[in-house]
Structures are given as structure tokens and as C-alpha cells.
Image (cartoon, rainbow, N blue to C red; front, top):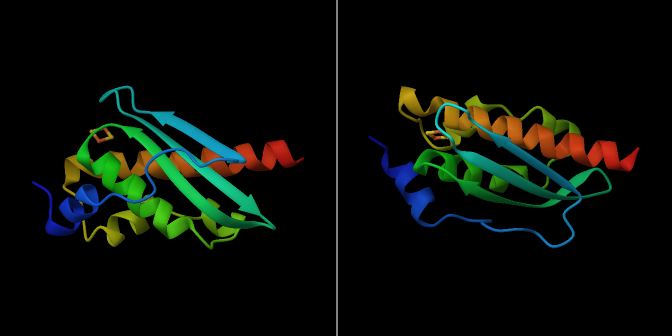
Length: 122
Ligand code: FES
């Protein structure tokens, strides 16, 4: 069902676990599949310095979390808010249609994490 890229990212997942001193955390879940995704961000001077994830879900949920946390590092807060699930799917060279919702979950979790940071900062 998955392409080689997704399987490779799933197997060698990066940024799994919690970052110490995260200042933005976003948790989202999908009611229909029951999967839960948590994104941790360390933001300094408006730049994402570090990103990690804890995901309890399918292989696509883990792969999208891993690739998204890699993509986030070095982005500004504004760029992170504009990260779309389509960009994450593209970085994974595609996902099966029934797994697109897994990438939507990561887009939502990233937005939650950035908004958590913005709320705490204000
Ligand atoms: Fe729900 Fe993948 S099946 S996040």
C-alpha cells in the first residue's frame, strides 16, 4: 500500500520523542481512526530551532510526523503556520488516498503547536 519513501521514513523515523524545553506543543486526534499525534516545537527568535513528535497511529501518521518535523526546522513561525498537508505528502512522494487524512492530522498538530507558542508568548 505504501511507496518506498514512506516505508523508509517510517523505518528510520527522525525526531521521535519529546524535546526538552519545548515552548509550543500541539495535540490532535482523529475520532474515526483513533490516532493521536503530538508535535513539540522549540522556537527562538521566531525560528523553529527544534521539532519532534509522539504519534500513536498508523505508519502514515508516523511517516508524516517524521517528515514534517524535519521540514519545520529552520522555518519562521509564519512559514510553519503555512505548512500544508499537500507539502508533507509531496515530501513523502505520495500517500494512498485513504491515508491522506493522516497528513491532515500533522498539518493540524503543527498549527496547534505554533498557536500554543504564540499564546504563551503574548
Ligand atoms: Fe488515522 Fe493514519 S489511519 S492517522
